Length: 516
Image 1 (cartoon, one colour):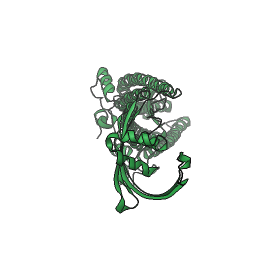
Image 2 (image 1 turned 180 degrees about the horizontal axis):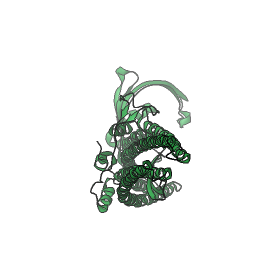
Image 3 (image 1 turned 30 degrees about the vertical axis):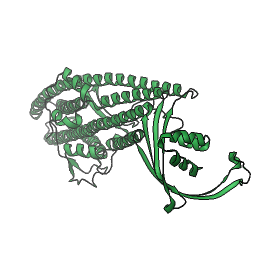
Image 4 (image 1 turned 180 degrees about the vertical axis):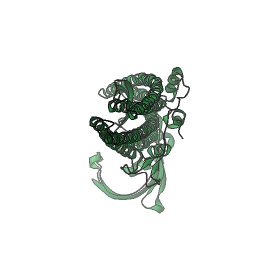
């Protein structure tokens, strides 16, 4: 039947090709010529119900109000929580050498390059772009070439051909067919809207990948700040231990000459032992924080390295609340991703509704066919197909319902995200103001406590005061130092969190943290 089909195209000519094909072969051959690329028509792309990224990782900076270490004063104490892929990384030392000292800029660079939060979403972007290209291929010309050698027999009686003298089975027939076939969609709204939907999904993934960079900066910089704070606490505790040991030795000397009682010596010793225990705990916390930082930046998971940057207190950038809200509405990449997801869902709805509309496609082939190459003759086929959906058992209605549900969910998620972003900006702006005041008060409290300790030690050396007053004053100084360290840490985390909230963490972090 294939030989006869090609002969019809040569005999009838292009003007009456379709009519001749249908006239001669209303059965199998006619169906082969007139069938579109998909007998069921273009199907609407079905998006998942939720437009949120499948990656379950998260990075959150929280400020909680808790009592101070040794006093009843409530202070803001931050915590940077990193979960999922953002807590891990690929090995960064294979491509970037490491000197043993880690600066904040270098840590952020390593995190952006090797943290799994950005690596995973970068591959998701590639997948989405590939899916968009696949959808676009249904709208572009498709050209294929074939070369076939056929050897067959045919039962004419099975085709209803019965003439005296003609055998029931003819053949074998042998022929060569070499040709190129071109197919082109002329009008197919479902395919067009499917392509637009996949393009918007690719755009959403690109924005999600950009947002992941801000989250990585928040995770790495926040953990680096935790290491700075832990290191400062350990250094302060070491200084307090040295002071406590000095007072203990002084008490021993005074006891030796009968100036103080044994109970004063015991109090001084207990204070020294307490400071030693505190130092062990703080050093352990510092080592764990450094291991966490190493895991985020692709370094070996050990604490055998040092950080080279120290971020003292610095004023926040001159940014009003209204300006912060305005910047967040235009700069937040997760908002842009949610908006792209909503547009994709809308295009998917339009694709589903377009399943009920007619579609038009054209296919053509040109080649040579014959018993052997020298005897081959040129033949061609041109077919125009109009597909009109009449009844598909309710499939189009089902696709529309699914697309409507996805669009409704995307719209609700976008509205919720806008509210979440505004809430984050307002909360971190409040934290920024509160922590700035906290640092100011803690600094003044530390100055007063240190002055009081100096006066108390002078009274103790003069025999006017006992060791109880000295120990209590030492505890006040230790508490004031920890409050100041926590205050600076909380203020830096608030600035970092605000940078993330307005969508500028990856590009404008130095404007907020005053990086060296």
